[in-house]
Every structure is written in C-alpha cells, then in structure tokens.
Length: 308
Image (cartoon, rainbow, N blue to C red; front, side, top):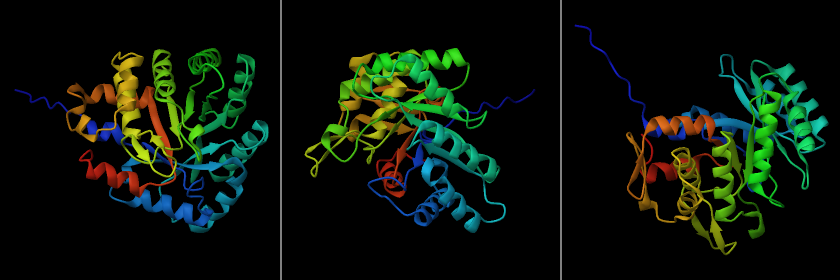
C-alpha cells in the first residue's frame, strides 16, 4: 500500500519569507553605500536570512552600488535582487536601472521598480509611468506609489486598470510614514488601500514608518505608528473577505496579545486563517515592506514568538 505524504506549509514561513526589503540607504538610517551593502549581505547570511527580500536603491545611486558590488562580491555569492526607487525624471531613472541591469546581470538584477504617481495624475499619466518603469527589462515588476491627495481606492483602481490593459504584472505602493506626523496615513486610509488592492487582486508594497511589528505610540512624534504585522494580518483578513471595518480594526490594534502566528496559521482576536491564504496573500497582497533596519524587526518578531 502506497504511503502518501501530505506536506503542510509552515504558516510562519509563509507569513514572513522575503518580507523585508532592505532600505538601509534611505532615511532615517541613511547609511553610506559600503555600509548598506555590508548590512544587507549580513542580513542574508544570518539565521533569519530567509526574511530578507530585495536590496532597495535609488536610481541615481545605482552606478555607485555597481562599483561596491564589483569590489566586494564573492565567487558563488547568491544573486542580488534589486528594487529600484525612482528619484529623478522617470525616463532617466528607468534608463539608469536598465543600464545597471544589463551590466550586472546575473550577479545583481533589477526585479522591481518603485515610482511615485504625481498628484493629480489621470489614468493616461499613470499608464505612461507604468510603461516607463516596465521598460527597464521584461522581468521587472513596477509598483506605483499612491499619493494621498485624492481618493486612494480610485487610484488603486486606475493602477489595476493599467496592469490589466498592458498585460504586465504590476502593483501599488503606500507610504506609511516619514519624518513628520502628516506623513503617516490614517487607519482608514490604510484600510481603504488594502481592501481596494485586494478587490482588484493587485499586489502591493508598503514603505516608511513601519519600524515595529505591532502598532505603537511614538513619543518623539507624539503619535501612533503603524505595525507591519498589523498590515500583514489585515491583508490576509481582506483576502478572506473581511471588509473595511474589520481591516481597519486590525490595523488599529495595539495589543500584541491580539495576534498569534504559529505553524497552523495567523490568529487575530480568536479568528484563525490558515497557511494557504497567507501564501496567496504574500503573492497577491502584501508582497514586501521597505525597512532601513533588518535586525531590529526580526528580533522583535522572535521576541513575540512569531518565528519558527
């Protein structure tokens, strides 16, 4: 009699694999290139290196990155996945990224491009920005950052329409913080973004301000900061059909005890969601978030008991 082995995925692995895109070059860390490269290399080599995603670099610093990589990469080192952040004219940023990709492949390849939609852009402008980012290479996936000057769900809908029209994978991005309180979107803004992306099956990224797993008070800014586990759990719940009120409640929750991440799934206030939905969410929902730190969030995940 044949024995059939059923492999059940570990929900913790599904939840956090490749979650943190390393943004050591960006504020508030603002590391120099050599230090940032060393930091990402150490993160990937650590016991929790499976949580590390891409190395994020602004388009204007790609040439500098190439120089450091050429000087420091070891023979046989795993290829570096690069996320390029447009920080100048989109055409110039795309050209710089294409040149880097052509020069450094396969040691380092651009697989994602992040570009901000200008305030007041119509769908034609969004499509131009998307196709410009997509021109870097056939395999590059553009993620367009949604401005907060208008309807976030409407902009998400426009991005989804462009992705469908050009028949090219793509996604949306939301900035969740910055250096001042006004840079932080409200819980209802974040919930609206997550639910809109889920409704349109549009993958998304988040960046900035997500320094700790659970939502918390920041004494320096005298305000609440979003938690990346809150957002990830909210995205999983939205995938299961939760509406804006429930998603916003998850985002707003400040109690670590409300959340449980185990082999069997993620639990929020007694409701369990299994690893299959979590895996779908990481592919079609929240694919990664940008962080200028790696060790700190990983240590906090371990302290909370969320890691294998």
